[in-house]
Amino acid sequence: MNVIVSSSKESLAEEFAYTLKEMSDTGEKIHVALSGGSTPKVIFDYISEELGEDILWDNINFYWGDERCVSPSDSESNYKMTVDHLLSKIDMPEENIFRIKGENDPDEEAIRYSQLLEDELPIVNGIPQFDLVMLGLGDDGHTVSIFPYNIELWDAKENCVVAVHPDSGQKRVTITGKIVNNAKAVAFLVTGANKAEKVKEIIMLEGNYETYPASLVNPESEELTWYLDKAAAKDLDFSEE
Ligand code: 6PG
Image 1 (cartoon, rainbow, N blue to C red):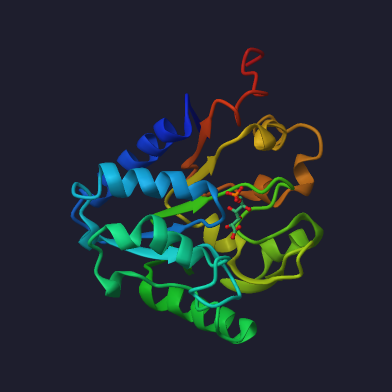
Image 2: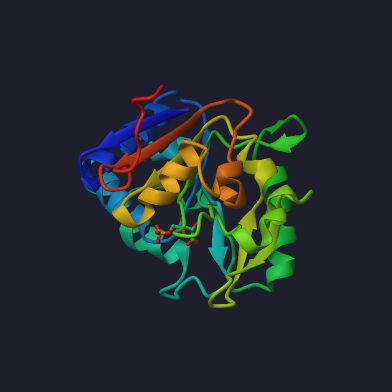
């Protein structure tokens, strides 16, 4: 596990952006699952404004780790957030973009997207393999759209399942633990002091970490990097190591 602590959201975005650039420079097609919520906004803005011309977008396919079951034009849509902050500002071919269709029936879309991953991604260990899965961390320790109250969804046999947000009741389509942990690399991008306690518990294996789905992220490749800003990292203490 690597932990990269940046002084600001912008410098965190820079760290992550260069990872994406390096991956696109290989010349091979790379498959990246994007996270949603609000954290990626600053990161996507930085990438599009600072590296939009440098990253070889033809070499990257974008997918989503999860999506809210709303229209792609809804303000809640992770796809819309990505269009607003990234896709509308870069020159990525439409055919490289594989959104989860939030407007579809959730159960049918979970099946469709599960099959899409089988069709589009390399199959490694009998499981579709992303080159990179980008993850966020919820205040409650959730990641993708697997929440503590139904943490067992993480171990579903399907590639994608339907989840329900515990507070809003909003349905989501999400990839499951088998997909996340089969990725070549996984990157948590977490900012803000409100996440600091969960970051500490999960990274230091303290408190109630085992109840948080994010603590189950443990890629077989062992390529797990936490990109944190100082605020999210403020409770970490590596001194005893
Ligand atoms: C979503 C996400 C979710 C998100 C975390 C953090 O659809 O909301 O994919 O897992 O990454 O909830 O969200 P924030 O970045 O808004 O704190």
